[in-house]
Image (cartoon, rainbow, N blue to C red; front, side, top):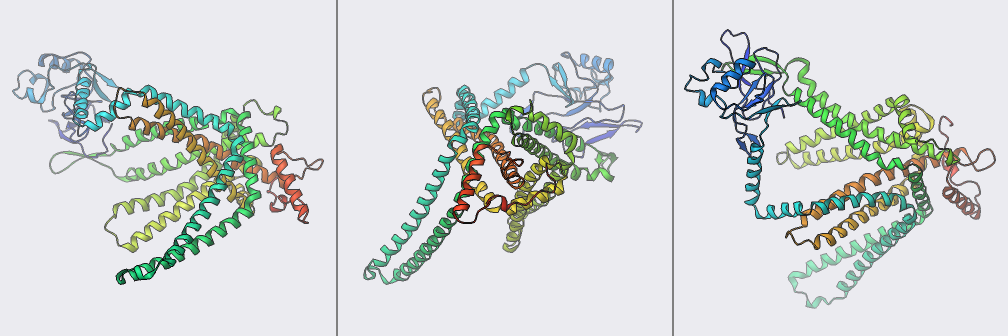
Length: 604
C-alpha cells in the first residue's frame, strides 16, 4: 500500500533539472511521477528481507521504470538491464556505467542474484515471481507461532477444523433463511414466552426483596454487635427502598402490559404477514448480500482514493537538500471532503436498500390479487428508485451524515483527552455523544418510514417525512409495542440461531481428536452465526415496519365497505374485526384503528 507520509527524501541530479528519489524510509512509498527522470514502480533492493514484527520489508526502495522480468545473476546483467530498459536498479548515486567498477556497488545495488519480478497492477510494485521469498515469510510466521504455545494450539485448532467451521457457517445461513419463513408460525409462542418471563421476573424479584426485608427485620438485634448495628439498619432501610421501588415498577409494568395487550396482537399479525411477504418475494432474502457487495466496492474505491491523496502535493527542496511533498491550496481540505464522502455514500447505499425493500413490500401490500404481482417486484422497486427517488435517498442519508459527523468528532475529542479532562468536561462530552447517538437512531427510524411514505405516495422527502412522523406520533403505543415486542422476538430468533449453531459445533468438534483447543473455532462460528442472523432478521424487521405503515394508511382510507375494500391480508382483517367487536362491546362503536389515523397528503 502507499504511505500516508508526505515526505519523500530525494536529491537533485547533476544539472538540477529533475528531482530524483534516493530512498523511501520507514514505510513503503509510491511512485506518482511527473518527471521523465523518475520511475513508475517501487523496486526493493532486497525484497526477501522481511521484518515480520514491524510488518515491512527491511530494504531500500527505489522508483524504476521497469521491473526485471528475468533473473539477474551478476552486476553486469544489472548494468545491461539498465542500459537496455533505462531502468536503474541501483541507488541513484551510481551511474549504470559504474555498476561493475565502483567499490560501493555491493551496498548500493540490489542483492544478487536479483530475482525475476512482475509488476503488480494498480499497486505499482515489483513483486518477486519466485516463491522462495514467500516461503521465508511463511517460515518466519511458523517460527513466531511456534514460540507461543497457546497461539499455536488455537491456530492449529482452526486449521484442523476448517471444514467443520465452513459447514457450520453454511448451517447458520440456512437456519436464518428458514427462520425468516417460519417465524410467523412461532411469533405467538415467542410473545407468550416474553410475557411469562417478564411476569415471573418482576414478581420473583419483588417477592425476593420483600422476603429479605421481612427476614432481616425479624432477626434479633441482640445478636448484632454494636459496631455492626448501624450497618444492619442501613441495609434494612436500603432493602425497604429497593422493595418499594420494585413493587412500583411491577405495578407500572403490569399496567403497561394491560394497555398494550391488544396492540401486541397487531405485532403478531404483522409478523405473520411478513412471513408471507418472503414467500411471495424470495429475492428479499438476498438484499443483505447486494448491499454488502456495494459497500465493499465503494470502500475499496475510497481506500484507493485515500492512498492517492496521501501522495499529492508539490515538490519543494528543504534546507537539508531533501525533497518534501507539501500539500497547499484546496488539496489540503480534500481529506475532510473525502471523510464526509465516506459517511454520506455509505449511508446512501444503506438508504437505497431501505427504499428498495419499502418499494417491493408496498407493491405486495397494495396488490389485492397476489397472483397479479409483477414478475420481479424487487427489480421494479430498484427501477423506480433510480428513476424517481435518488434525490430522496440522498437527502435522507445526508441528514444522517450531519448528525454522525459531530458525534464522531466528539468521540475523537473524548479519546484524545482521556485522562486529561476534568470530571465535568468528561460528563458533558459523554452526554453530548449520547444525545447525538439517540438523535441519529430516531432520524434513522424516521427516514425509513419516510422512504415507505415516498414509495406509497411518490412525494418528496420532506413531505414524506412529515406524513410518516404524524402517523407514528398518532400510533405511538402501537409503534412502542412493535419496537419492543418485535425487537425482542427477533432477538430471541438471533439467540436461537447462535445457540443451534453453537450446539451443532460442540457436538461436531467434540468428536475431533486431532487438536486440543477448539474454543477459537467455536467462537468464530458463533460470531459468524450472529452476524448472519442479524443481517437477515434486520431485513425482516424492516419489512414489519413497512407493513405497519401500509396498514395504518389502509385503515384510514378504507373501512371494508363496498368500494372501499381493505388491501390488507386476512390476518390483519381479523385483527381489525376483533378490534371493532371489542369497541362495540365497550359501547363506543366505530373503527378503533381508523380514528387514530389522519390522511396522508396524497391518496394513492
